[in-house]
Length: 241
Image 1 (cartoon, one colour):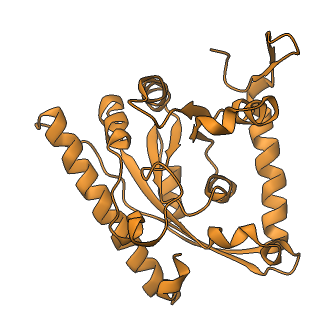
Image 2 (cartoon, helix red, strand yellow):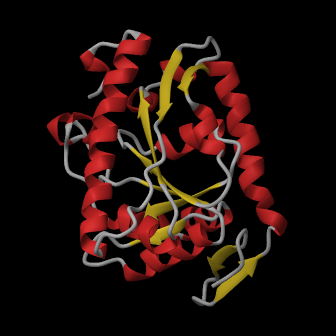
């Protein structure tokens, strides 16, 4: 595996080439440029952003209504986030190069993603914040975790094996960013990002029971954060597609 910050591309003969980006500089360049765009176009409301800046490794578990959710969260969190991204985003040289450059890593959603889980555990144990979408894909309607939809247990397994917490986070309004209007330089775009309390592995329980407990707490937290966001910001039910 190449060091964090390297870009992997394949030449016409299929041979892999690695281009080094010292200190993952590319991640911070992309974040800076994204921040500039967001300042010009978006009104972002936040609750408990300070939770994302707690020291040590953790799993950032986010709700998922848009493929732009990682950008929305990364722009506001000062810590670097190592996102777990579906393998389809690594399908060509350009997108794969971008993914590697920002230290994202791929996950195969078919079967048991052993490699991705091991990578996530290692990075969290080493002190990184790893971003994961427990729904596994963009989910809306009754299937959304914010309406009590199911989550995948891998997020809890990673936290358990790394002995670090899961930090729940919800993002609202990002589904509208596929339209042109929110990106016009008149602060028309609106986003709401809310962070919850960290959920720690429970000592003294068998591993399976421990994961089930964490998953239950995380599911409850997502629904509660959605209710809190609607109440605090006066948002309608229609804010969630």
